[in-house]
Amino acid sequence: MKFNSLFIMLLFGFFLTSCKTVSVTYDFDRSADFNTFKTYNFHQKGIDKLEVNDLDKRRILSAIEANLAAKGFTKSETPDLYINVLASSKEKVNIDNNYYGGYWGPYWGGPSRVYQYTSGTIIIDMVDNKKNILIWQGAGSGLNVSNLSTKGEDIPNAINEILEKFPPPAQK
Image (cartoon, rainbow, N blue to C red; front, side, top):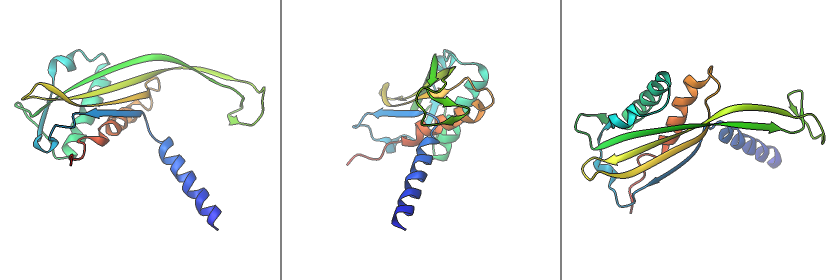
């Protein structure tokens, strides 16, 4: 019985980690008091330079707004935080060795499948408006932006994953 429970827990853990849209990293100023920040706005010059199509730009900005609103932040013309977003993409080639009709079999020397896709990275910067310094940065990489049918869901999910650790817990 213990083996079955352990197997189910491991399988569930694998399922949860495999559902991630992007690989996320973040960093922040450990001396900043994040409890003092209540309002935000986008750094317009930075957003204007964001090199993504208009649909994706709206998806990114809407997801950030929804995420921050859920955390109690409000948008303001005189914000505590300015948000800048950077995005990049690069073509990737993936080779699946031993690909056998959609099944990952244990057979050496089986046929391979080669496919190309575009991998995207989204970086979100939070800047303290009063001090004009970067206080938090989160990055999500590995977003498959080639799949047009899932981008509408994948981009907001990626933003939520990036902002999951914002604001960081209070320092002790």
